[in-house]
Length: 358
Ligand SMILES: [Fe+2]
Ligand SMILES: [Fe+2]
Image (cartoon, protein in one colour):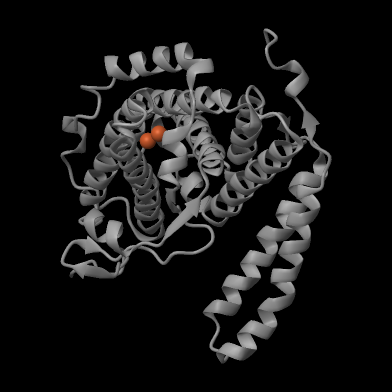
């Protein structure tokens, strides 16, 4: 008997090429920016630190890291049913996020080449890393008989325009949170090798070091533009970006807690740890950190988790569209109220500590 029950069906563009998941407010985003403004930035006040980081990029520690080992060469049909769906979704989301980094950094490297060669080199070397990461994940998808058409993704996705300073807040945080996500999974599986159901997680240790270095690059860039970090606007924007990144990850991951469960992780504990660590890391450069230890923080996010469960249930129901909208409206409003409440929670000022050994 053909075992079709166990293997979930994915929509395909062409045989073996997966239709990219629908874009939502919670899916990885593609960015574009004001290249002129970026080229005009004066980076001289922190050029030494930037040079040191780019020198590390040039060394290219992971040149030989992303090579598929023997371990991959087997059938992965034992990862089936719900786990397989969650797995493919994880690989796709990760691949899309890495690839979006690649596109943005590549374009920045190209546009800044003549006007700001050092920064351009930094972006080019980071795009090299992200291309490897995305390629490695896409290859992993092929173990599940699927792959993403990255060319199609490049053309079909909407690009969000952000002014350079917002690009820096967003990419800095996504690199640092990426570091904490990968290293936390890696360390957990090091202690529980029986939960390592697929070999890609073995690669996460060196991989996350790339993300950490990328984050350091943005840290150094932001320090060249004091207005990005030092005034009251900076404090408001940093709060906004910290909250959006943490809330998006939390809502996404709790919705997919089955994926973390199959690795032996509790999604809530995992996320709380990653948020705490990223918040602490960001406090080295951002003027504020969020008060994530205040119980109200997760109480509010949990209300959003429940609202989102109901929103998905309404979406899956057969009611006509206008009815769906009416049923969804109070839930959207409730999410908005919670997120605004979280935004206005008193943050913790960190700028007085910057420049001191911590
Ligand atoms: Fe990456
Ligand atoms: Fe990165």
